[in-house]
Length: 302
Ligand SMILES: [Zn+2]
Ligand SMILES: [Zn+2]
Image (cartoon, rainbow, N blue to C red; front, side):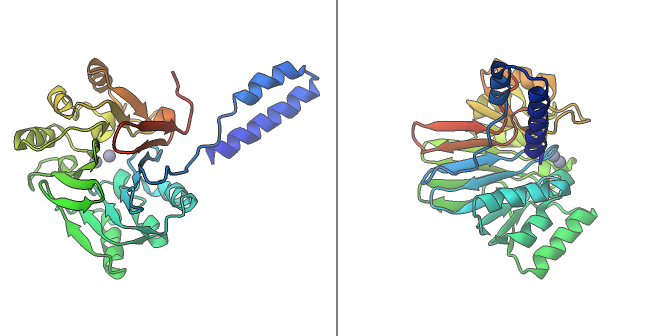
């Protein structure tokens, strides 16, 4: 939607400019300034990971090298049409794995609508219920559609094979005082490359993961809780030791995400940071060995 508006505006400007009889060299740089159409093309046979720009919220879509698909979270309800058209563009007819990290609306708000459009094989969620209407409706939908659900916690392996390992690292307790800490944390490994998806896991959950002795290392870290200062401790960062970090947050969000201290910590560990509020949807693809390609929907703000 944003793109269309932008193109229309540029079109209007071109008409205005030609009306002013400006020279062509004035128009040239303007045309170059038009952001390229984002490519939602997958790199075949590789692990493809998209951090979708869903405003303030989280949603990640993963295409495994064997063609299987995984959706983690689905943003707020307003994000559903964007996610559906994205999946449509990639010709995704079925989601082999769907993970709802925790019951907050900025993670599961769009889920029911997405599942109405795209078939799901199995739905994974933490042992964390909610009274919210969004959560109750989603649970009803899963039951009505007979989508198998599985409650997961740290230490469980969701999938293994074809060079892929999907491990759940958290939650490691079922009585966290903050629902965010109940987030399912997934470590996805493809041969020598790995991604860590943390949902909104905060310091307490990070501490438990550190104490567990599990392998937390990842080339790409989805930063916990939209870059809030309640997540991403220096100890956690040291253990994950990422080269790249992705912060999923909405432009000008009212929470002030990401917090300066989070950005400073990432910078001090020399992590390259991508942000959905500045970069739009971010696409990683890797052959599991040496290559890691990154493509962003918008040109970097830098
Ligand atoms: Zn959240
Ligand atoms: Zn949350």
